[in-house]
Length: 213
Image (tube, rainbow, N blue to C red; front, side):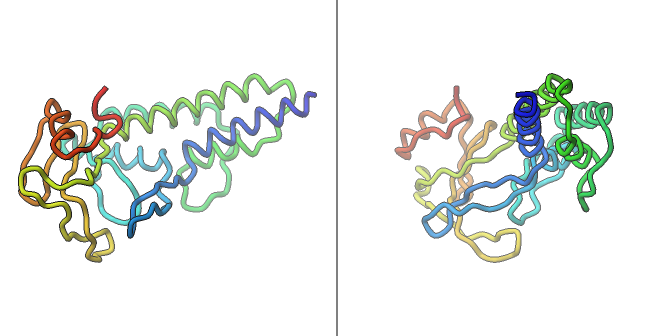
């Protein structure tokens, strides 16, 4: 029974560590179908957000807190908390080339062969790491941008040609929305958040989840 408890606690910690510092998968639409692509871990995205970096292409989804440069204080505060607490827990760092020391410390914790008397402690670690992953995702999603797959009610355009991170020409939907506002990339028409319901009615589409309560 004790072995099962240890195994369960280790599994919970491993899952939480992966949720925070493991590579993520996001689905994007290509040629009419959803395609999975690998993206940075939540922790790495948080590091980038704390520096106030902007989207620079590639397959990685990153927030764009440019107006908060030189750093995004909320992201920086959470990052410092995670780094400090993981440093306090540290029992060493796993050999994972190219990864930050906090990620390597978490992997070392997840790989440890804990004893039965450590089960409660390991489960507390797992709960804390998992809560960080939830907080990071919520923080990053505040900066997330949605594509609205409908013609612009102002100019009638639906897609325009643009360039992806590798410089290739791609077609993208003209209507974009985030928590701050919506805009047509073709004609420049803008809508404030209080007009999202009206915009949704005009284009015959539901409001993206997270835009409105």
